[in-house]
Image 1: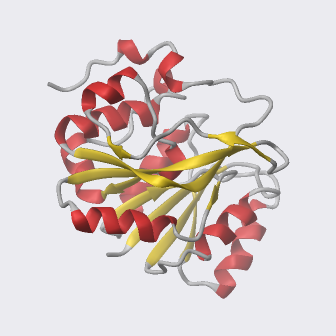
Image 2 (image 1 turned 30 degrees about the horizontal axis):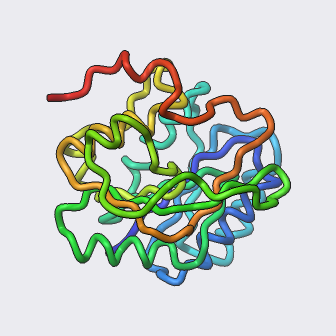
Image 3 (image 1 turned 90 degrees about the horizontal axis):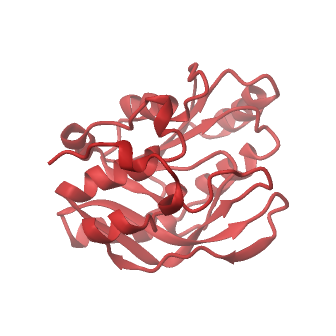
Length: 226
């Protein structure tokens, strides 16, 4: 049940180590951690290599994404060797039971293609601000079409799903909604579920522009597969 965890990063050497530490402290340990660096100009490489010296599960790659983060997420998917792929951003945090609880759901239902979790919102200073507006349970395509309740840093996907629905859309217009657009494609062909436990901490910076995904403009421009 090996998992490949993909963490794209850029100039976040002050935040990335905490994200890596939380991942390495998971109760389920059979995973590889792929750090995909967009050629950071700070101490990111040095910080990651300190972890690599102590833990062989950590792998480090450099790849230009030219401002389109989904390029490096796709790069990670293509490098992944696990049966499952999990996503985490370099400034978000995981609770220790996250992977374990998600794997239980996949084991119970082989038709699941995507499992997320509930979570909490934190700010720049890691202060808990509020509960992320997400409820547990199965999410239908129609319900997902109305609103995106899946926190991107909580998502875990069966790797075989990407063979059937494709990778993240890399066009610039999808930046900010690339994860949502992928969730919709997955929900057309697979079951989707959210674990009813807050297992991630999703960081919202003061400069964060995207807001609630269901209010973003642009998603209506994408033609979903029939």
